Image 1 (cartoon, helix red, strand yellow):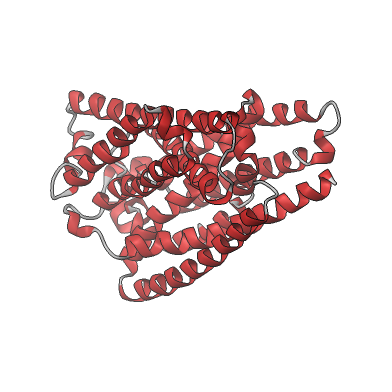
Image 2 (cartoon, rainbow, N blue to C red; image 1 turned 45 degrees about the vertical axis):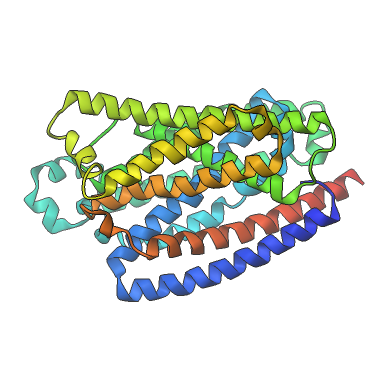
Length: 379
């Protein structure tokens, strides 16, 4: 973020709007929890995955930029670091899900486990104490690495010759840890909703979605908070950011199609029902929207340099992608509980509104504080 008064004013307005959204979402979620407790936890899980994905994607991009460099990372470095700093809030926002484990996961219901041989077989891994221990370990590792990277990226530490090297030494194992923990988290939190089904590329599919969410969020911030580039070099940096979004749109689609092709061609009775549930009852229209709006439309638009070099146009594409990320998560989560699209609920919008509002408000606060600290350090 630049030291521009208009940018700081926009950031303050973003924080205020986010707090209002969080308040409205909280009231709606409270009403939903009282009236539809089971549906509340399902909707909360999808909304949580969306915003946790944005933060973890920023966390991964920050470490990637520390390793490989690039002008695209300099443009959004403050945003990536501020988003990574919100991981303690996301750890706190994970707590409501702990009260709904039996509403969400069949393996958390002892009567179901007693009747099902497969659930008894996987019980040493999928059980409540071990699930909670793993979740705690994921957040502990993410928060610790983000904290170490934040300390190492302070101006006074980067000013010494070993500063950049320290960042690289932290980021290299950090990326490996992120890849492993994000994979296991996707298995624990989402794939285990239907414990009879499994996929070997599920973790990579989620990681691609997280990085894509982070890039889309960053593009929106660039358009909203930064002045328009006044020279060709600024447009080139935007073009680099657009190219990254295009690359991860294609990578996300490739992972999704590879998973579908392998499972559909195998036609095994323990695997194919997962796709059958999502290809009937109206869910096929959500799948079609993902193909057309999440992949084909951004793919075509981002092939144009004109789209990528104009912040407002790039932000429009990014906004569509970020909205479709929620659709993708709902398509993954909701059919585990309802065989028809009628299973969608107004809480599916209220929960992301609350979580996203609270997360964005903290993000805006941390970005404002960070940029102020950078200005003081520069002075």
